[in-house]
Image (tube, rainbow, N blue to C red; front, side, top):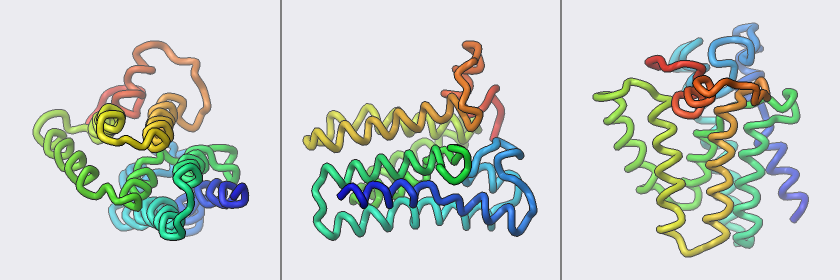
Length: 207
């Protein structure tokens, strides 16, 4: 079972985005835009097609497929949820790129979908995307509200204590990565800290 966790971390650490952008655009994704390997950064810098490609990889190959397969093999819930956490850790802190990585949102969504929570994910995404369109015009803020909503709902909606513990840890990690970014720094003033938590940026801006 320990081998499964090692494979899960290495899978999460796979930096398809870094390789793809380096090969086709001759640029380092960690030195441009938001300086992360997530969908939003690729979409903003290179357009919708490469953004969708790396987004699908993060959601399906890293998140959905491995957890779906493990679940279909009737692995224990402990190792299923621990594997989910380890995949996210690998994505956020890749051993192949100096512990840099993405924000982990799409990979987390893929994992949650693999566990069968389609309706919950779609409802939350739809609600906050509608609110984003009409109110705050900021994807980072919508993501923050989505994370907080899941963190609040999970303890009241699931009796499986292991599920609650591991997925609360995952959502805490997602918020933590927003704060430290890929600079691995906590030397922040209060306004920058708040902006990173809320907007995934050093300052509020439409994005």
